Length: 165
Ligand SMILES: CC(C)(COP(=O)(O)OP(=O)(O)OC[C@H]1O[C@@H](n2cnc3c(N)ncnc32)[C@H](O)[C@@H]1OP(=O)(O)O)[C@@H](O)C(=O)NCCC(=O)NCCS
Image (cartoon, rainbow, N blue to C red; front, side, top):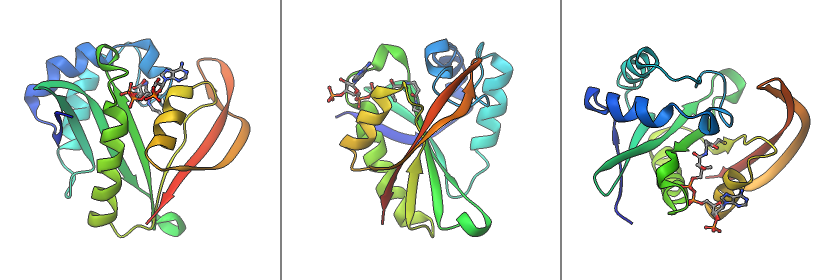
């Protein structure tokens, strides 16, 4: 698999905005990832992710092309031994195993670089592709909360998947 995880740079802006501007991606992420996804959103995102040390959100590059992002969000206070995993792959690249590979690499990176014991992800009920990817990467379903999420004017189930160090 010719997949690289590397820090974002300003050169990713054009591809990021083109590929992120997709309602099928936004529908499965929080409202922090908007549709339409404008150049301004892209500029702010790249500014934010290039400030973290160590890097928390990586650009995905498949055979030389930018194709998405994967990131860890370390939690605070009583949840500080946990980090939330987030990811998206651009639609032209779906079904090639990219998300599964990216997640496996982030598990190793997360446990090596952060003082955490658990990585979790919270796909929405209808997002079967994401649930499959998490299961393939070794995550276990810990809980299914009923209709907790309000997204695009619909209530959705919240699934909690996790992997332990
Ligand atoms: C979910 C997502 C990351 C998957 O990326 P990907 O690189 O295509 O994933 P992979 O190729 O590694 O694996 C996808 C798996 O889901 C399966 N799949 C895809 N769509 C499916 C569907 N509608 N129903 C059932 N399985 C499905 C594929 O067959 C594949 O499984 P397989 O390898 O056993 O055949 C991508 O679709 C995406 O970015 N979606 C929008 C954003 C998102 O959902 N992010 C995650 C939020 S929790």
